[in-house]
Image (cartoon, rainbow, N blue to C red; front, side):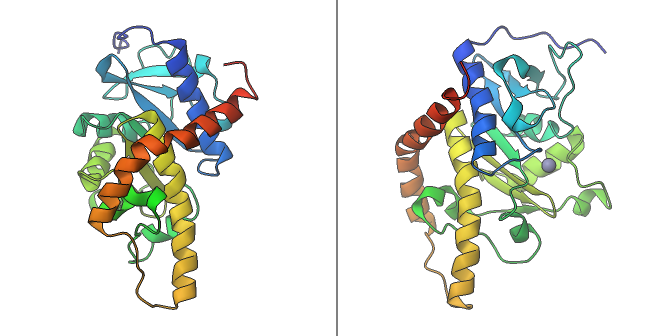
Amino acid sequence: MSAPKSAGAVGADVLGDLAAASRILAAQGVVDGFGHVSMRHPSAPDRYLMARSIAPALVTPGEIIEYDLDSNPCNANGRGSFLERFIHGEIYKARRDVMSVVHSHSPSVVPFGLVGVPMRAMFHNAAFIAAGVPVFDIRDRFGATDMLVSDGAKGVALAESMGSRDIVLMRAHGSVACGPTLQTAVFRAVYTEVNARIQHWTMALGGGAPMAALDEKEGRLADAVNQGAGRRAWDLWRAQVRNQVNW
Ligand SMILES: [Zn+2]
């Protein structure tokens, strides 16, 4: 099969921010040797951008590949692709409002996909969680698998499970966080992991007592503030990457 046509070159600043996002997620303990972040192509809604198959802390702007929404690479030039890129392509297809997707296996989040305890928004930085956190169980539709979202059909099922939310947990695997910008998706992925830790502490401290988590309305109000104020966190994290590289 021939590669789909590229939608055109992307600015160095965009590629730099996307590569930096990978390194930020690694530095914040959201991804390790695995996990990935993508963004929709800034001028072509039917294309997205993501690094080649590489550990997130090692990504450079030159490693970014363009994909169509079926997750076929446009310009791989022999470079390998992530097995689970279909998570990204199928969410972009299903959700025109999503501009960036983070997939991770961050450890504090995984337990919430294993037991019937819903994740709730413990503090304002994780406000978007107050809208609800669905859990995708791959075995419901696909039986026993290797747990990976490694083709379009599994990506479609995951996107359906996420629905209109910006987060979905994956049973015995990890989670996905999305946003209307790269910066917001990164912010949400970082604070999803922090929120999970806080919920573990809160439940241990409370010993089964009710938790005064953000309700849905508080979540909407605080999430709106995070779209602007969250930029401060991005600016810090981006500067920390810039201290290590020349892009
Ligand atoms: Zn995964």
